[in-house]
Length: 602
Image 1 (cartoon, helix red, strand yellow):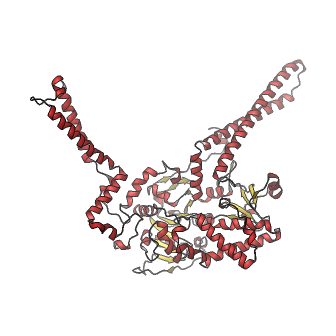
Image 2 (cartoon, rainbow, N blue to C red):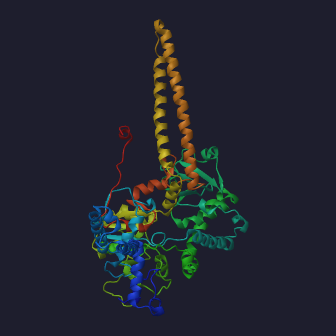
């Protein structure tokens, strides 16, 4: 394959740039080595030259000061000076020889298929930004996974390899849907005047299509937060609406609740929250259906995607580490594939911008980064063994019809047959709980990695409030221990209340008074710990999201989304490119789970 056919990184210059000004290929190589050397610590060589030059001047000065016997002034005045001078010279010679032996990393021979450095160069440099230093680049483990047992790694496209500017994308999608609702459903324009802030809509929320509210629930389906429009419901209002109801969609009777489980659902939540206060309860469910229909329409008819593909860099944020990650996986012996529900035309137009390359849709060199590309996958039905569809081969110039690498549609049986692997030998990386995680894991035992961009935001907040998570845990542990003390003193008081001994009545009275005093003291301490805990929780919650708090936690419990994350994602991270920082034989080890009675012994 020619250089022209290879993908280019943003910092790779064109052939004309390299040849401008009469610069030769050797000079360009020197500049590349110089830049690489600076990044890998080659400044030390420059410093060594300057030190050697200074040392030369100093030695020349000393030589001019030497007498006829060849000794310096200091040596002539000190009988041991010659021995010291010889020792210093030998030490200096050793240091200079060691400097000459060291070479900057960039001089190690290898040519770069993409960019100005070998594929492994970014991998080496990434150690300075690794999970050890930056928690936002870590991969977190729910279930132990041996990476060396994975034969093939697959990726979703939207919100996985393609990192979107959600503010711009959601604004565009929402406006297109609003225009259609006004035009085709006769919804008054003023109903959209009070759309909540963009941070109001996020993953994991549940929409109540009967009451017109948006709620957050814990892992057991109990409502912890509820809003109607942009107004938060009081504890009394929330209790009257939901009480102890389980609001998890798949256990609730009928179709009252629906989960906003993808980043694409944000415009729907905002539109519904804006219009719901203006409608009667009988109209709410029908209105939600219209919102969904018009949202699907702008995605299908091309009105949304045509704007995105015309100005791709307004809607995607290139992750410069994606190419290095994909190449590192292949060099590590793994097959790499793309499996997306997006049409081939859209994937073709957006992949280069997502990788930080050109926006030319005809430049298909990026396909060499994958062993197989599957568009129009129709997940989650793609993962069903009962629904077998023959894939359609997409012809590319110079492509092989015997071993096609670009397909549209198909089924999991066809994909596994092409790779000669099955079940837990696959790792699939995606952002959608239902389409990417649940079906691939439940039906086919694939290993899964969930990409959660919001995780990076939450880790950043915790970094700006250093120690707050540790303080919260410590305070909660103290609260729990103090609560047990209160219960113990209550039990003693209860036991003493049953004792009747007239001969020792005064002694019993004193013991009861002491126990009551200890219980009151423990109770006051408990209230203080509860106050401190709630203060820390509110501080962390408001800093994370002023409406909903953490995506993963609701008080002491996980959220419903957090439960799904725990159940269906073997590993998870804020970005797909976090895989770059782990070797192909890494052992992802989960932490040990403890039952309450085991925690008592820790």
